[in-house]
Image 1 (cartoon, chains in turn orange, blue):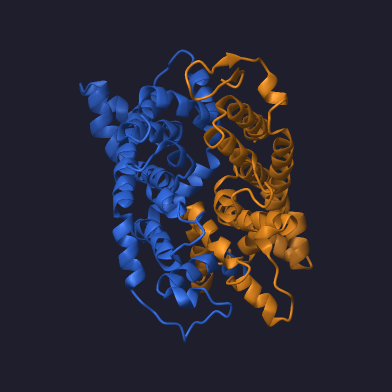
Image 2 (cartoon, rainbow over the protein chains, first blue to last red; image 1 turned 180 degrees about the vertical axis):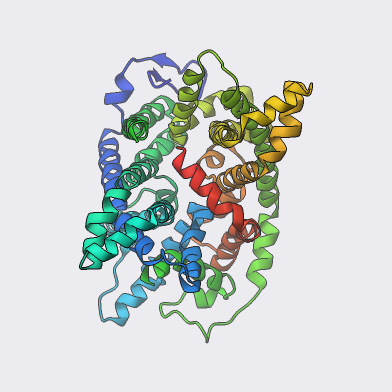
Length: 253
Length: 258
């Protein structure tokens, strides 16, 4: 389908080879979406991973407070991304948003987060990375629990500080799961759609369009299904490459 | 502590706003104690959202049943029988699973529009089942792999047919696995957004679409919007408390078996 000039009406279908892949009519937007998606993938992981790791290390102990906090972190995993994204959209609102209210309390100027290119991109990354935390947290927590008790005890005796304990003893145990977790999150991040849809709808000036979102708009709003298919196959290519890495990793482990 | 705030604050704020009158949501200085609280938002949201709530229940429910049934049969076959090209099938199923929604949606849309399946329950249920099936198959297979083979063999020796063995031996003892799978599938189906936003129409729109379609407009009734957001997550919240025990196990099983 991506090889055709494919409109919705009959008779509009025409073979054009690879043209859709390289000479699409929204080429600038495609390049932008590609770059934005890639940037988002890495920044979302970069933001969410340390937070989730820190939380997992802090909350691994068995007591009532840790249990409640764990539930609070894991609970959002159940809920629809689109709905949180709507809530965030209003939290970042120029006039009525809480974020701007907090800024004004500290005497900072209000920022029109969603109508400036740079801040809008930041907001999408911020909201999106929040979405990755519970999942990463769950994986890391289960990995931490799987470390044998003897190893932990030995580490306690041998190491002078907690930090050393984690760097030298725990990390080698966690390494495979950390890699898997990062790759899974990258795949998930590459598919970014709902956050963009609800928070910015691609704006301002189409700067926050992700590949999924661009494919959606090109296919279902501009009704150029062929082009949309081509864009979505580019997305598939990214996901497939990461998945190959992942498969390789799981086969070896 | 900060992390909790980061992750859970939107929900808390949404719940708070859903009980607040419009004037107090749209202020530049948020009020907590001085705000006027009301239940009206919830009634209005309920009235407008009930059809899509029912749609969501029908679509995710039927597709859940279908995909668990087919998925467990397929998973059973893949786990127990020596089939030719089994590895190929497993690889293919895994491969299908990683295809992004958007890549599927574009061709699906044109197929559906030529078959007249857009905005029909049959089409929606078919798509949801198709999307869920690879995952259901793989995860059921891994649950069946854990069960001892000897049980099946004992049943076979006693003269039960393959089908009978499956339904009266294997299925009952793998109930926890089935429950965990169903929870995950239900969660994904309920929260699915890209599929229904493209393939459903006014008749079959699901709850996520119904909530999201308000955001693009210039003027939105914020109170009902947030109340409907709450309604959309409420079933899963209640559900998650009921089945808490299976939840973590299911999530972890689903996470590791990509």
